Image (cartoon, rainbow, N blue to C red; front, side, top):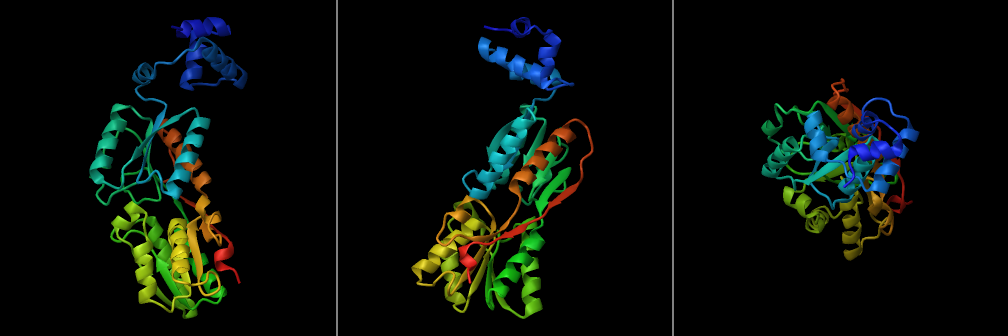
Length: 327
């Protein structure tokens, strides 16, 4: 079995230089880095990750805790987090909490035992005691958490404003907002606040529906959408808090014989892949997931090195127009 000394000998470098490449410490030229990794592949050398983490007290691993791995938004976020970590020579340790507090507690303990450099939390229960006195930095994405040292958010309030303005501009006067999780405060709640402000400003009638945690867990919103349209039959415009909900709203309208966008206009939030796959495509509020993921990883690495990071970072949103709000 090849050793670190073998890699150093074959690459013509010192053991110290090879070690710095593997641990991403100090300045290393790209040519040297490529040479080391080429020899590692040739010799089939596998670094002992546990030994490296013990010697450094921390591993080159970032824990990532999400409430879903199949939800389109979180799938996109995870993919971008992994890529951003890879580019900085880090790996991610992924946990799927399903929003359950006891799982989050268990995963935090696993992050401690694995000596992660930092944790990026995209899933946060209302009770946050388990996140206190951690020995690694905690970065949050679209979650309220006092114990986090830095939070990443998109401009949810502005997103609600853009959605309402667009629907009203397209002639909608009886609007329906299908929100996030009832009883679980999140930054996404600001979408409703921006939406309400515009509706009140222009005198548009609006109603709101807040799905329970069960709908969020199952990602099956058809019953609550059907119920809302039966309760508010005059609805001519829907603002859904995610593209997943918007896609299901399009299907419900099709089942009820409601023409989209002729009689009903629908706008979502996130701009994930599903938004371009429905018929018609979903007009949506795009949050810059790639940029947010890159910022979260960069902050995690910076904070792990003992450097200061901004407490809150807000990213702008934009309107992406597709067929669901066509004229």
